[in-house]
Length: 45
Image: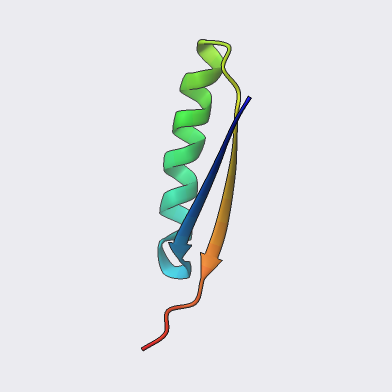
């Protein structure tokens, strides 16, 4: 089982989740499950 950790700016978190859900569904077809953990990171100016 693969573990993917992604850090994303909070504003882009939903789009990142969509990408990983798509990748997750594709990997289910190949019987390779992926755990996607999205860690929101606050943007500091």
